[in-house]
Image (cartoon, rainbow, N blue to C red; front, side, top):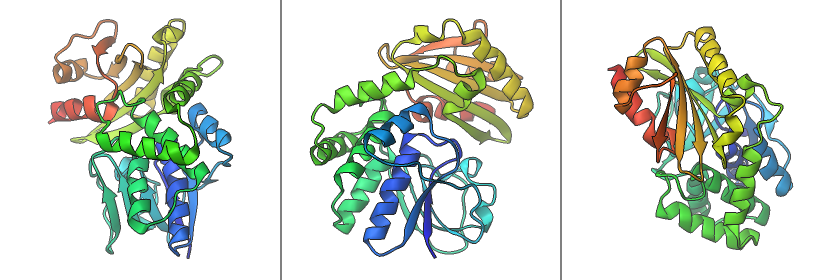
Length: 306
């Protein structure tokens, strides 16, 4: 039986690239594996795969009775709906431990680093498997994306070390320039609906029984949202109502100014205001230095729901 390697429901570059890089590794050590995805690719991920000659992984949303090696999450809200019927053989992730449980022992690689692909590179080293040039390229790009080219507070010395090693393998010395090219692709919002933008990098959470949704758009110039910000705010409210959420947020992250404007729709805005000790104005606020949903939003917002 083949193992499917697959990331979360709304895949980002780390989710997709780790599924591909992990599947290659598993095949090299004698475990048949197929990379998969639960959703459509965002523009940045499409750019990365095209640059290094990869096709989209298999689109697959049902894993009942299939062997599954999870990448880039361990939270039930990000898993396929039939996760409890799947045979989870492993998890590789860099987030907090989620609620997935298994009936049999499994392989776990969970580390507090900036990107899942950093951990996958450590798995290659552990198994003494050489990283191919094209695989090294997509792994490097995923790390640059997740760490916001080393600017994110989630970035560690290990991430930087791994990027330098992968850059040598794939032959791209100026990885910073490639990172900026990726974020320019990520900044393209013209002709895209508000809902598509909100869901481009969106994750649902359960915080003490309250349903929360948090999306993030990382761009090189926040002014590209000037003409569509109200549309985003309106659709964020519509999404909250449709999904019966307590709070829906959208981080508009400017990687050059190193901060985020956060749009908020909530049934009780005071919870959000209390979490960050701020006052929302027109349902939004600028948080200087905020680049990471994982490290600078969730750890503050979740305790506010206790």
